[in-house]
Amino acid sequence: MSARGWFLFSLMGVVWGIPYLMIKVAVDAVSPPMVVFTRCALGAALLLPFAVRQGGLTRTVRTHWRPMLAFAVLEIMVPWLTLTDAERHLSSSTAGLLIAGTPIVGVALARFFGPVANAAERLNPRRVTGLTLGLAGVTVLTLPHLTGGDARSLGEVLLTVLGYATAPLIAARRLKDVPTLQLIAPCLTLAALAYAPAAAATWPGAVPSAHVLAALAGLGVICTAVAFVAFLELIKEAGPTRATVITYVNPAIAVAAGAVFLDEPLTPGVLAAFALILAGSVLATAAGARRRRTAPVERSAPQDNQANAHVESA
Image (cartoon, rainbow, N blue to C red; front, side, top):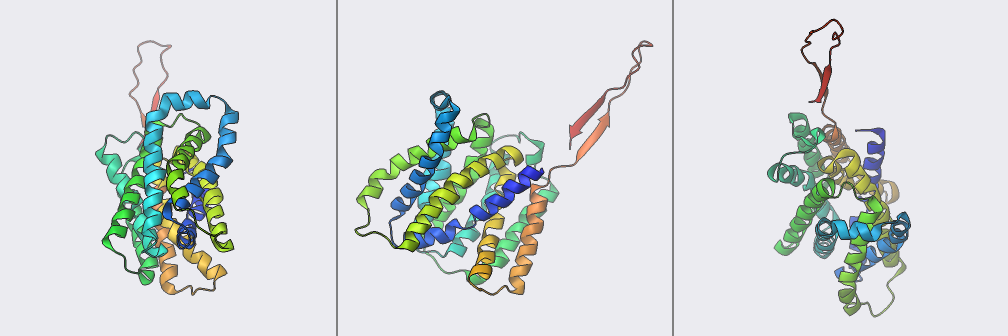
């Protein structure tokens, strides 16, 4: 993966490593539809003016509205509500552990729904090893912090995983020529409009506390507007399956933040998990080796004495 890809990967590990905590803080005071509406409305308000300024937004929506609608439903409208509602009963670490299964599901879906379009997306032993190590690292990291939850909450997180695994495939295969802002701004706007009635019906009777307002603002600005721009660029740079490997890094970021800002213990188990996650991420996102193959040379005339080399991705 390129230097730009690694930068986007690192950025996404941070900005999508903190939503679980913010959702947990917000959903204790406001309804799940209110959380989703606020997050989408803030993100749309920030990104839509830039998308309009690029020009051609209406034409883009008319041309690609079907895959854009599918992306909005699978990446935003369903997963954000199910995840937010699930965190009313599950701990954030439990949710993070379950969401970490997204790359595995993404690989399975990519293989099931058709041939892999990019050599970097092909499944090979090194990538399988990386995915396995990453999942093992997340398990080691979160297992001591797990709390129980009901079947409904676990099912909601499963729906979230399916959405998160499917949407990047749509973005990579059907929306790769759509500018990032012109994809995400209309999707966030649609989601905000869809959740506006439910948010209005469950509007809190009093102004939430400063902590809740800060969590909602962080979800909208950092974890939505900034994160989606970076994530879609990461998909274009590294491919959909490799991009979802950030879900291995996210729980590690949450624990690191707790150790730095809340003086939570950094145990040997946590350090071991970091090592597994790092190794798994490197292996799972590494590009396949390139192999140079030289075609046979046919000399039919004195002037035709140049060999043509054919380079093929492994």
